[in-house]
Image (cartoon, rainbow, N blue to C red; front, top):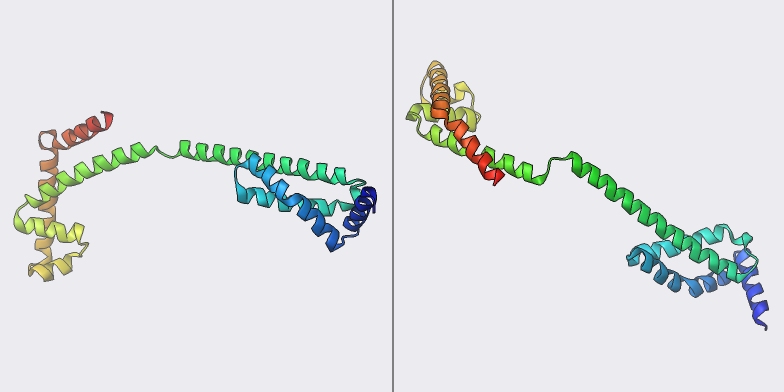
Length: 197
């Protein structure tokens, strides 16, 4: 049997959708296509997907080929184009990620804000601890434990009116303590100074 006849038989089998012919063509070109696509994409799994998809495209166009070399050329050109598309998609994806990153505050800014919050909270807790005992307890139960006035009154065995008075007193004392001598401003300056260094 001549080589030309073998090619003609293979081409006819492919055009007719014969499984043996398609399998032979697949076995002939699948591995080389995977290797070629992997060299272009740098990703083995992606390369295998490219090779399979290229064969599926070939089967849709199987009637268009007169010679085996046309099929080979189609497979490699289609594989190259698919790899270029993958590269372009990755670049578009990277650009989109860069744009999103640009819109988000930088991680350092978030860390800086966390540092400022921490310093302010640290100072606030120090001041809460230095309140008169009943005042401090009411404030903690209200704002930290999230209990309501009646529950605090019952738990501390005082009247709801006393709870409200202690709350008002705690807020007033904390405000004075934090604003006294610009201590809140000093906290902010110290935190911002640390951030700038």
